[in-house]
Image (cartoon, rainbow, N blue to C red):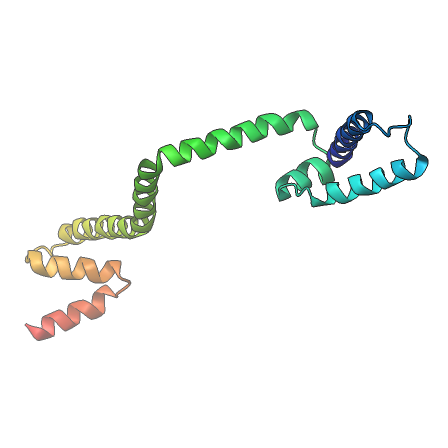
Length: 163
């Protein structure tokens, strides 16, 4: 629909230009012949093939058929976005760098937080037991071992043997 309107507009402008040139020409003899109109239409089709629309205009407004009245506001927003991006390059760059850094470190921080919560919970449970309440270093080792999927009984036997 958009391309048909554009073709019609181009044809009308081309027609008006040819009519004004013929009127200025002293050998003008009235209207156009049928052959000349056909040639003008062929030229208009060749000229319209040379007009390349952006791919998104072709897709949304020609193929899908969105209303043409949406095109002008969309192009205005695109122009405003280009101006905004060109004026604030440094701010946008540093903001994106900060966001990417936070996104990169978030899983690492979450894993460390969960590990610390597990170790503190395991320490609390082990400190309530009379067997493991004696040494803080031993308590840290046992709680870390439990949080990493270890067995409490096998570790306790290894620790007691080494002492």
